[in-house]
Image (tube, rainbow, N blue to C red; front, side):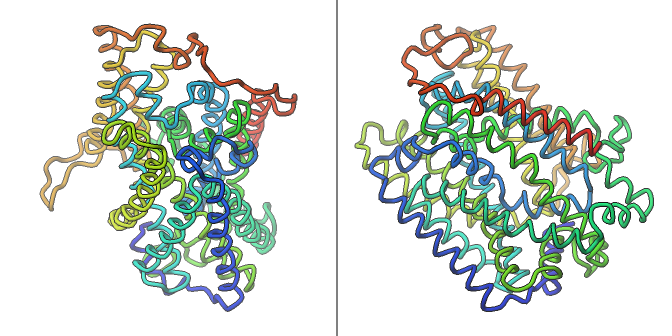
Length: 569
């Protein structure tokens, strides 16, 4: 399953898009730009542009929180994984997302919101020092545009295969629309469009699931059809089959990598420290709304597997020779092939719009996070401090343009990788895994010192990079610098173990350096560390009614996840 094979299969996946479908697409793009224009009217300061003036209700930020993650990897990648790996793909949701989203809402949002930080790197500056802040700001900026490029490239692949447009035209046109509504409306424009995109995505995927299940005889018919393939088919309906340590046969590797690498380090590292997500919660109108943002987002996240994994399984039954190599459709073609087989014109236009909305949401999330971090954490403190607010508003808009342009370039970098799902998890293991260790230790241990945080973060990032090349070997221009040091067959398992190594390296160095250096005075840690309240924290607002209780929302989401995990064990 490679992106290059998707390009080769483009001719076989062209859809019969007609004037009605194009009209639906055009109407959607007009609405997207219109929302940006309307949001522009409310922008008077840089905080309005970059953090929506911290004024949005919880239901808006909650849906935007999950929509920002519904990008190319979520839709195409998870459907492809559903076709290839089966039910075990739910690990990316029920272990690899929901617990971390609940932890963010209940544990980490109080630190973020009460300290009134504009960004995740700013928290690091205040908790540690400028060196830690700069290192994270630059690495985050790099990661944001790399991930934005992945979404752009995946979008271009779909448009090329569905509509026949050249890949470079697809990239540029898609980037242009994202640029328009973010530049015009700032974060408010992005968030309100993400809410719209959430419902458009549902409207596009739900018909595929309903019609597809009807075609295969319902869920029971789907299970019978796939299990009729023998042991290989039966394995697709087991979450934990083949995860024994030592000789795993599960494509995701053994249970240690899945539980600790994916479920703890990568999951918590992504959802709790990735500013593309945290930014949505920081835009909420008050403390309660900020806490509820990831908790509200957790509920659709629980059930999204039904819209991504199930279509992949349906495609195994309805699409001949799916994933069989050669000129046959690849696993990446699962949803496009189902769209062509099952949906009439009009509904097809809605589904296609849903796909495009998903990819635009993913890119917009990363670009809007990039412009905030660049403006507040790189340009303002280290290049042009003390300028009027209007100046930083202009810088934010210029940074948005720069982020999109760079994203176009990184889209072509992404095209050089065989598998964009493996690529994205590699990026998370390098950039997010060590950052989570630095965050959690600094939040819970007052003795953590500024230089302990800095050297821990640097060491974890380096360790993740070294681990990657230890698993894959290093080849430069056709010259094998070294062979793999450790053999791990599953690429995803390599990423999971790389994340574990990064976390451990960061933690060990952070603790060791902290014990040898001087910590900050306790009064400088107000609102930044557990047990040190901030007397200047903003008011929490009115006490929420019982059904808005963050603890109730969080533990109910965890309970539903546990029940579903047991049902599909």
